[in-house]
Length: 273
Image (cartoon, rainbow, N blue to C red):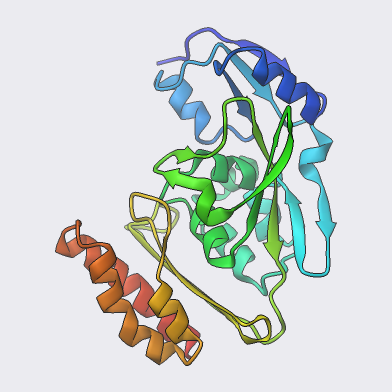
C-alpha cells in the first residue's frame, strides 16, 4: 500500500515546526528518520494531513555539556551515538544500546528523539533513558518543559506529548568514574524488538541505584525494592528481583514473567562481575 495524500513542510527551525504543527489541529505529524512513521503511513495506520520535516532544523542537532548532564538534540541518530560522534557520558551504555538497535540502515536514519516520541514499549531508548533517569525536553508554543523519562511515557505508544509539541532534546546524566551499568535484552534474533529488557545502573558517587524492567507492553517498570537492594550489592538485588517482578507483573502469564526475570537476573549478574 501507499500513504494517503498529505502536504509537506520542511521546517526551518523549531518555531517554524511548532507553528506548522499547531496550524492543523492535531492532524500534522513531525518526521525525521521516518523509521516508524514511514511504515505506518504505507499501511495507512497513520493518515496525517501534513508532514513536518525536521531534518534541516539545526536546533535539534545541538550537543550541550553541563557538569552533571549532556543535552543531546532530538535529531541525532542511533548510528552517530553508536559511532561515538555523540559523546557518551554513560561510560559505554549508550553506545552499546545504540549498536543493538535494529540494523545499520535503520540506525543511520532513526533518531533518539523520534524513538522516545514514538514510545514503543520494546524500544531500547525508552528503557535506557528510564534507567538513567534522563530528562526529556519538550517544546510547545507556550515554551519548553522538562519531564523525566519515566513520567513521559504513559502507555504503549502514548506519552504526555501534545499534538502541537516536539521532543527537542534529551538530558542524559553524566555517570561517575566508578559507576557500573548492565543492559540485557532478550530477543528472537539480533536487531529485533525485545521480548524483555533488564537494565541496571549503580553510581555510588552520586548515591544512585536503579533497576528497570523494559519491554513490558507498558512504560518501563521501575523495581524500587530491587533498586534499593542494589545499593548493597548485585547479589542482594538479585534476591529481591524475582519476588518484585512476580508481584508487579502478576497480571501476565508465566512465560512473560520468566523472560523478564531472566533479563533482570542476567543484567544483575553482569553488574556483579
